[in-house]
View 1 (cartoon, rainbow, N blue to C red):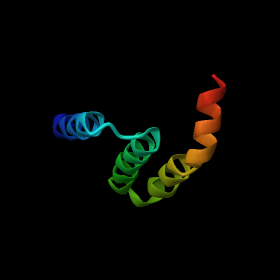
View 2: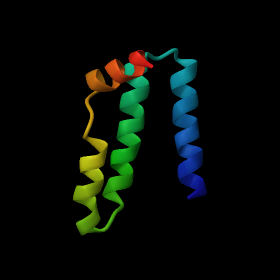
View 3: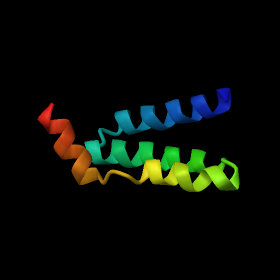
Length: 67
């Protein structure tokens, strides 16, 4: 658990330092969530992936800019 947090923190820090776009942040978070789904038991994997893939970046961006 601690290793995962450290890895995610390093990934986010590298994205920040590289000056990535909002889309890159979104895709990075999505990739991390998909990785977590792969660690789930077989029955939970599909539900997890449905949650991860329920919103496209375009929909996310529309919702984010409305707020």
